[in-house]
Image (cartoon, rainbow, N blue to C red):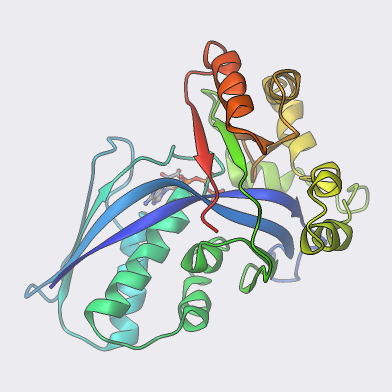
Length: 285
Ligand code: ATP
């Protein structure tokens, strides 16, 4: 049997990391959204019991057990106790190592797809729990709708209110950022935490002007120390009319938010010459 799954990119509308667990894992507090920039995965099972095959249109991805989609297939095969092979084809559209969760989203798509193929009947909450062993962003990617995410990434609370129509201009500078290297730079004694409760209160009350002002990412200053172009890009987005602009995850992707499509076009045209990998995206609501 063969299924198609969309793996949506994620953005961190806000990101805090309150502390690190004795195990070394981060505690997170994030407002996350999925956007309509997506990989497409074709997932099928085969009679070749031992084999998991990953193919991709991207020339730069590992296709072995280092691929998060491969890891998801291993985990689901153990859950299902089946003796079948899995073939996964990834049509890659999400920029790699961008802070947009491409690997995690591919893994979540494999969890959802194999859940369907093998009729396992697992809920989103079950898949989120299973996904946590692959990466902290996988639980959110199982849901792929606006949510506050806490714990090690496994507590996903989808927003009850719908977000208004928002346009996002998403721009990935041509630099590579290593997530582990940025996380090592966090100085927990001196982190300037944002106020996630206030942000959530503004979002839940649909006071979006206030919500835009309350957005933050505690990792942004760390990545920006190494790559000052991140701040330049943010400033340009604001200059061209974004209501708010910020780095996602550990970067380097920066996004600008606006409530008007015409303004998103203006930002896109203004940024394009500066960073070629720039898109207009919508939130999956
Ligand atoms: P992180 O979750 O580390 O913040 P990211 O969102 O910045 O990641 P990804 O596109 O997930 O970026 O890539 C991070 C790393 O994961 C890359 O070095 C890549 O080689 C590896 N990786 C493994 N599997 C995948 C996959 N299916 N898609 C993209 N990257 C993958």
